[in-house]
Length: 208
View 1 (spheres, rainbow, N blue to C red):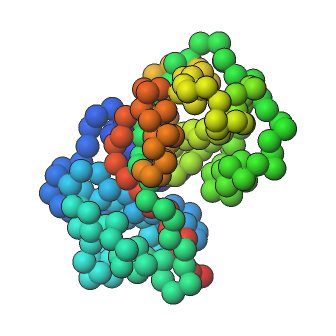
View 2: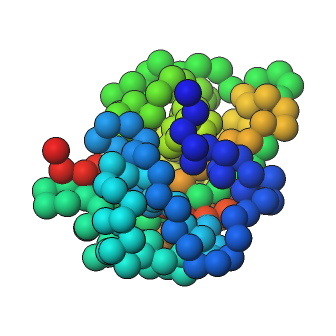
């Protein structure tokens, strides 16, 4: 069964956003022990096991308050984990013949390990430039991440790898990525490959 947050991700990928009203919509946690705070322009969504009244009492809003440090610590609780604030990016698949084959030699890479710890149905594709992971991620959305084997290689390698990765996604199907805003090189590569920013998010791992 799809998580209700998925519909909002898919709508945003098509340019349809929630109302700019400063509101915060509280949704069920993504799965046991995993929540998130997602901010679009002027409206936020919080996926948590906490009661909506308790969330409201913590004072978040849709104008940035849903990503405030004190609120995120409240969601996690004592001993819980708060992830980094990432930019949410969206693009659409190109379909056609897949430009990248499977890579089985990078299973021990930290990026692959992170993907398998957070996402489902993770597949790793790539070539001599690097690899991408394609998986079912936050709320069931299709997610993509990228890693160059040699980050210092010729400029444009990352964006070229990402464009090839879009051939792995059926034509017109939305695909998402989460990139730390401070990772400017990666952010520029995603933007150059046709991804557009739609919001921001933080993954929360509440204390047991």
